[in-house]
Amino acid sequence: MTDQNTQDGTVPQTPLVIHAQYLKDFSFENPHAPDTLRQDGNRPKMDMDISLDVNKLEDDEIEHLYNVSMIIRARADRGEKVMFITDVTYSALVSINGIDEKKHHPLLFVEVPHTIFPFARQIISDATQAGGYIPLQLSPVDFRTLYLDRFGKKQQDTIEEAPKSQDKPKADKKANKKKAS
Image (cartoon, rainbow, N blue to C red; front, side, top):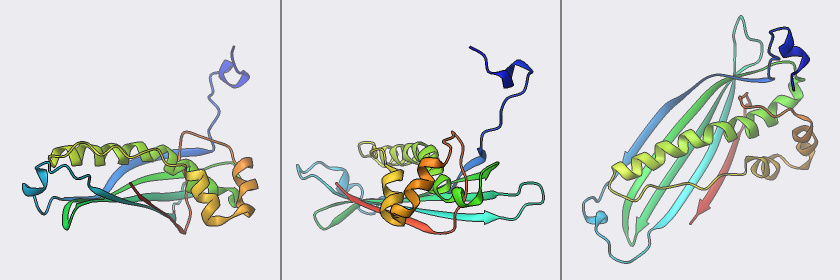
């Protein structure tokens, strides 16, 4: 089945375009190694925090250009000792086209994080493995629910009306999630 737009050789533009994604900041601390690398039968206590930072950027060519950063901090403690602490800031440079600016907010805080999360997750997994631990596999995050919890019911209609895309946009507030395993 072919689409009329693809018959004439043009591809329809998606409303959300990722121009670049990149590792902005990264750290891994293994302060008590090698002591914490020995198994003692106790499960580590895990703590994780995810926050989003969205900034609109000025650009002469792109009207609605945003930088979306996902900051993930994970920490594992066993007893009184810190096993590891890792911080990752993973970002995407995105633009939104053909959508009312009022609908940018949910795209930037739901769709973009949903797209870039797997890349940040992989960096954390690789770092914990390189630090001598079992790779930390973060569970998928429901950014839509987090968004609704943070910004309320008034934004639900905007989310449902906003087009979904494989690319990402902007915003100027922070959304946080804490999770302990």
